[in-house]
Length: 445
Image (tube, rainbow, N blue to C red; front, side):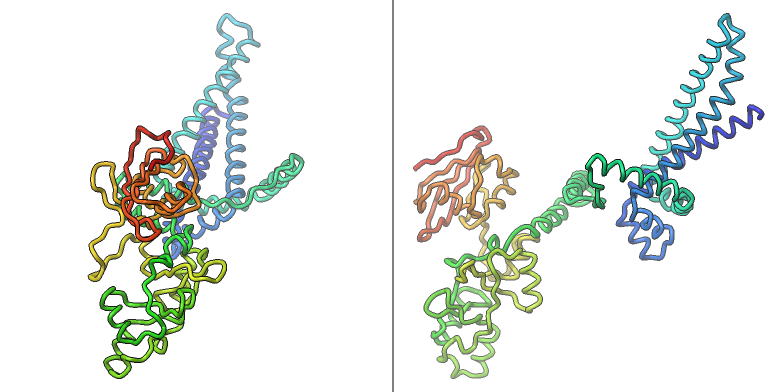
């Protein structure tokens, strides 16, 4: 065979190697979300790429077979066709024929390996990363044909692989998600730092992820803070309660908060009072709607679904013994995702307020997680784990008794000082952040 023809064959094999290497990177790194969008618009190539990605191990094995064969034939053609004439040329030097042949073989092998790495791997893969989507769509049909042709070899290799794995006692890995939650959050953080999305948009997505982990107990209004109306109280008392509090719904209770008779709606009360003025003196429980109940350990996402399904905006939270633990509203749940929702009736009040650099005034009901998020700290930095969820609860847990005004708890770099109490509940806490005292944890009176 003429030397020119052999060069053409080698270049063709190198081109095939480079194409397969580029196609592998392009198909694996292409954005699946955009592929799904293209497929829904009727793009046949996008649908084919998604079908190939449904069996990634088979796809990668197919490409590996092609790359291996291309590399093998490149080396074979080069060793047979190029080494001999190069060895003949080197034999003219003052060295033996055997040494010349060996040198020629080494030189051809090194040259082809270098060329194969550069032109068959590095350059194609670099280009594939920059044009992943376009190359993936163009490669879809050729890869599908190659998969059919190489199917017997791939089947044989997969079978041999599974046998070896079983002998080694290794279970065959199942399907791995293309993007894990941690990777998605990392990508989101990178996108926010590069300006691709705003910090507010990134925070909304992160809060939506966290929403799937919290329970109703985390967001509920505790029993001691519930505003209720007695079941036997006249309706006009409920009217006064609505005006005074600005609330739109009130639980109607019997002799104790555990005896919830229903929920009184402000729109029902005002309509009844308008249409039947004599109803002002009738007991509230006659006009209450049935209450919806939810266990305190119900996931917040499930509680949100329940409220939507029952077409209500409030539910009574019960503990494991059936007693009332508090109440949760649709607004409470949504605020865990979008942040504080204020209306014209809400007082101008911030549960977390910075009063000086590194010093916050915090409502005792604020969750510890919310405080740590505000200060960009991890719970591990506190040097302890707590069963309590609120800042006030953490202080009580650390003290082992009911707190008093002036009590100070030190948790790592945080100093929590009780500023005011409401009965037995911590109402206001002053939080001082001292990064230099991370190792300190203790109590002061």
